[in-house]
Length: 370
Picture 1: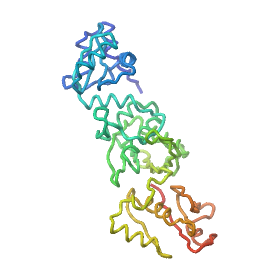
Picture 2: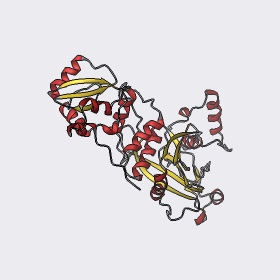
Picture 3: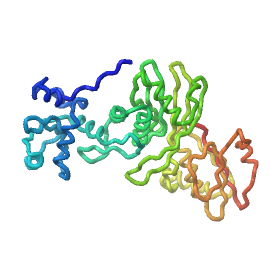
Picture 4: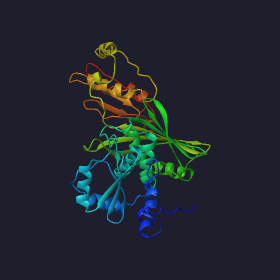
């Protein structure tokens, strides 16, 4: 495959005398204020922020440095006081050109992600300071454009999915490329399309991460990935990802189920029940015997409701035993059993056994696969 050379920045072309300053500005910014991020120069950017280190700046993008003049792009009106401060710190004259807010956000977000780790931190709009309302596909593609190698691509996709509270990631090979979809609030949404030439490599890298047999692409496989992810600058949280693959006409489809190891809900009151339904449900949990069946589509909250309910009844005087496939959250004060058919530990075997002593026993079954 022929590699395409990375474009030479407009600033370097200007320094080499290949283009004029006006031409360089037109290359990095069109008439509608849209930036060509590939033609911005990192050295110009580094110099500018080094000069202005420790200074609170308006939203600006360094475009060019030419003949002792910094050309900056900004989506807002920059005050005369701010311009004077920037001029004093950089010892240059300063000219500001209007750029689109979308271009500024795109530039800002490409400078901040660390693709070596997974994060669920929601993106903030750097102009307003509020949660970003950008299109999910656009921000995902921005992160992917910075990824180097297939592992970083996968981590960028996972981070984007976590930031938008997706429960599943679908990677589907097509004739046009690898279609990426997220399941958000139970509904699959198209996010982006990866090029055909890297489709198989991305799926292979995912199979390596999940300890699957990469030499076998003719049968379905299941695997797991254990990762850490960052949450709001706190200590890293643990996460399990269940991965399943399925051979199809254009290659292998992969589905990743995202499962934080800690139940995000602490009490039944926070699950989203209506007041009337909550009262009825709590009455059910107080009964000395009976059965409660949870059913619904993927991402509807079955697992969260079950685990939170078990935490509510796991008091000092109650013995709770679960039989699960797989164990998704590890809960305190509860005996949890993982199904292992090969070892003879099936749902039936778990239900037949009664190792616990106490007035009440509770058995729960988990879902099986994404």
